[in-house]
Amino acid sequence: MAGDSAAMLTCPRAHRCVGLALIEVLIAFALISLGSLGLLRLQRLLHDSADFARQRAEAVRLAEADLEGLRQFSRLEAGGGTFAWADITPLTAAALEDVASNTGFSLQRSVALGPTPRLKAVDTRIGWTDREGAAQQLTLSSLIAAIDPAAIGALALRRDPGLPVGARARHPLIPLDAKELPDGRLVHKPDPRSTRVWIYDARSGRVTGRCTAAAGLTSAELTAASLGDCRSLSGLLLTGQVRFATDTASPTRLDAEQPRGTALGLDLQLTLSSSGHPDPAWECEDDAPDDTPAGSSAALAVRYVCVVQPAGSPPQWSGRLDLRPIGWTLAASGDSAYQVCRYSADHNGNGRIDNREHPQRYSAVVEPLGDQNFLVIRAGASCPTDVAANLADLANWVNDSTAAHQP
Image (cartoon, rainbow, N blue to C red):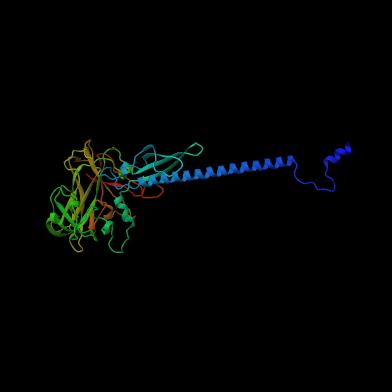
């Protein structure tokens, strides 16, 4: 029997064994099944990862599109029927329509003031549900500066070696709302309430003529037919703004950079120390709310334009520019009084305050001057000072120091 059992478990010597035992087949099948399941699981993971990458890329695109859309403001203050920097506001979660994806996306936006009042810190959040049903979220953050779009285009203009040229191939100190008439004259009416119109030379920025037009007309509404009593003159521009940090008793450099007080009524007075000037030696226009009680104006700044006819050889002028209050008082102290600072600093580092840097008294001016700005503060307060412009101090692109001017 033992011999018979051995014979049953072995192949005859004359024949070779062929095929696999059942246990070998089962083991091979199990191994192949495990490998196939692993490959299927890997394929599913790769598919889910690719799907999540597509969804995340779409979320990045949507967030970037929202931030870029916010940067396309056409003005700073709200109103006028166009999107403004002031219109950059928070947004509650809202579904986004017309997005080509296998899931839905929602957008939520938070907005807060940045390191300075002229910056807004914006966080755009895109939410969605992935293939596994898990909630996902992506956030992009950015700072959006309150830079007037009217001034941005000048950065890309080609500079000629001769006279400086700004927006619209004009001298940079010529107001942007000056209008070119069909006859080639470049006219500007600084205050619609006034009748005074000035004619500019586009290249040099000099004022070459003076006309009158009906009160109520703006620069954009001027026509050749609306101008009258025109006569030639040769004048140099003296322009700037008056800002108001009257909402605080202790203004800081941030208040000087972005003052939030409302405009007061005022005029400007130029006192010349040079002589021999043609008549009129100087004229000034401004858009101040002359008849508005203090504190009731909605404007935050007053724009002024002065024209001075120089004298002598070479033609030049010297003197001092002051504010004349209307409806308020200039004094060093007092609860209802104010004082005037001028934005002035040694920007070029030559150790003195040149004419371009807004001195207390101008000397031998031979060119147009811009950015001759003033800051009105409460009586008894100190004129705020800043540090030199630098990259280490966040957002301190300009030295906004001020110096006492009046009284």
